[in-house]
Image 1 (tube, each protein chain N blue to C red):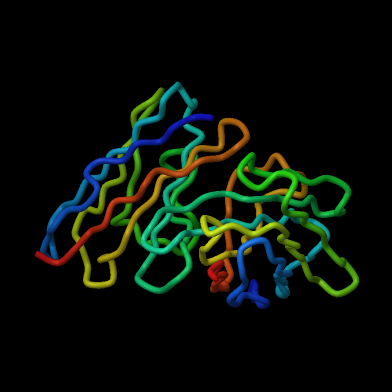
Image 2 (tube, each protein chain N blue to C red; image 1 turned 135 degrees about the vertical axis):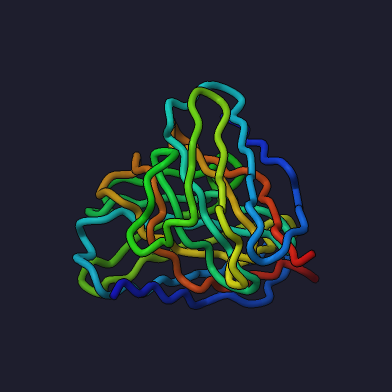
Length: 107
Length: 122
């Protein structure tokens, strides 16, 4: 199985900050990467797919980049509703696996 | 609007069984596969099982293979997860999620239910 490793595991930030989360795959995954947001007590929500494509309805302050084994999620200006846990997920093969999550907390 | 509503969770003893349901609406049900993804308390996400839109094909994670069976009733827009020989490490919130294609080799979980909690404990 492909292992997905996110860093950091948690971070503290303020409204308006630029936030970057990294996801590393144990092998190349050819941009078959999605990002999900999970607010406390809620279900995950798909944010981006194909490493950089925004899911319909997701604000443009979210963006993604990367290639090969290394990918990043960036929130350009953190909003109050963005305090949540973020997960990366590959879909290069089966089984699809998730990173362990990055919790974005209030500074 | 896509809606997925899970039910059937609860407290069960180790070795026991439980059947979860996922009622879907807001999309052409047979066109999309459905997966189950679980989340242990305070932990991350783990894909568990998938069933194709037709119901003819299924996939399972190694951690549950042989103990869990996924099925669907396309006449009732409902997917089921039959869980047997439950263990303490099966304790989790179980989410059903709509896939982005009809097969069991899809890519994305594009809509999720609110989840149902399964607790395995004596």
